[in-house]
Amino acid sequence: MRNLLLSVAIIALSVGGTPAEAASKPRRISEAQLVRYAATSFDKRKKMFTREVVGLHRNLLVVADYPCGDVCPTYTRRIIRYDVPLADCARKGGVVVSERIVRGIGLASIEVCKPAVLAKAPAQP
Image (tube, rainbow, N blue to C red; front, side, top):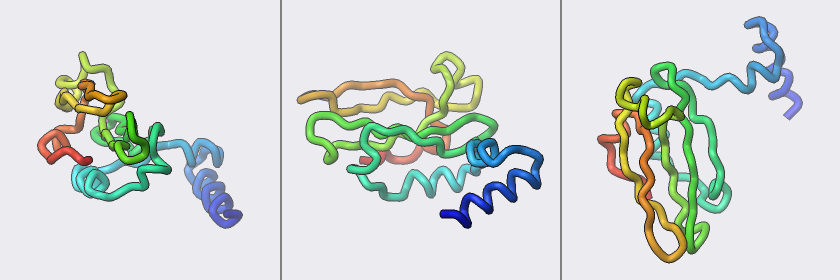
């Protein structure tokens, strides 16, 4: 852990920022990296009810939300999306997609702004 912090500090100083700034800046990701990330498995118990920053794609922040409902962690899903208002989605190059998530004993639909490359991909359980 100490080596990791030292590495972050060295990188931050070399680019002119503080260690905290270097650690908090999202990395740029390509469409191929987004597709690979979407295809990876994840620990439903550890991820349920969390959000993580995936990176910057086309200068837009990409986040992964992990909602769960009813039988957790079994029904934990990963929803990868742009962190932009739905009204701006198409203009920014995203696609508004309706995602179905478990809410209580039923299903609910939520609309999210997905990167176009993921809107074409099959949904992840």
